Length: 82
Image 1 (cartoon, rainbow, N blue to C red):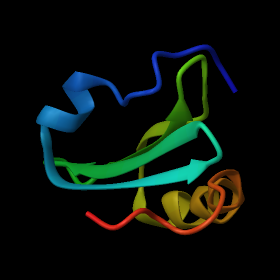
Image 2: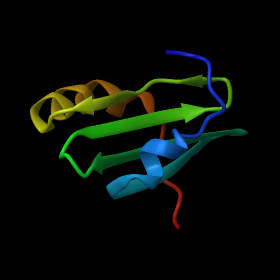
Image 3: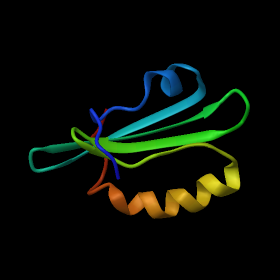
């Protein structure tokens, strides 16, 4: 966990060839769960809210699958409809 503004890095988001985002709410707290893949095939993920986040970046597919199992428990509830 680290301090953050609650949004993923603009560099990771804009340079991704794949990008997906879901927003979860728990009371007054909104959690953004963003993930993507860079052109080199490496993956990144960023679940966070203002002031607190967890993330990984520049990892291969098998490592991302393992880390996703851990981070999936960090998002509360079901995503809000888009």
